[in-house]
Image 1: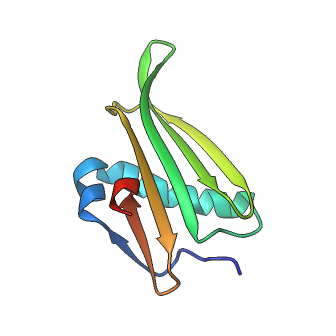
Image 2: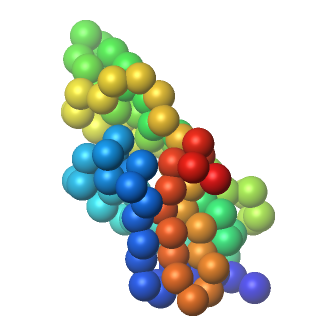
Image 3: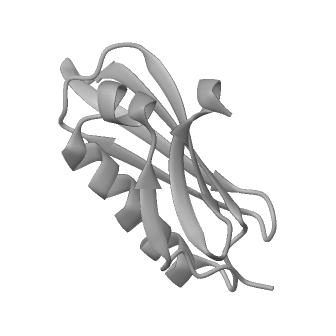
Length: 104
């Protein structure tokens, strides 16, 4: 069964506090891109965010992964982001929830 990620979307307080709105929107957009890349979406989408320096510029590295079927996308955005954070997006059919891994 492929998941759609098109139900009502909910975002936890942790995500609101830790992840800027434009990055939240980018993460949801990444799910659409993953859908085009693989045959089906897994119920769990994992996004690993890390602020790094690439070619002397501060960037946000986003590694978007799913297990079944296996898929991976990597992005580098010109965005200052401190530290590391893992975000889960879960499709429970009736609703879609974005939460920090630490909130799971």
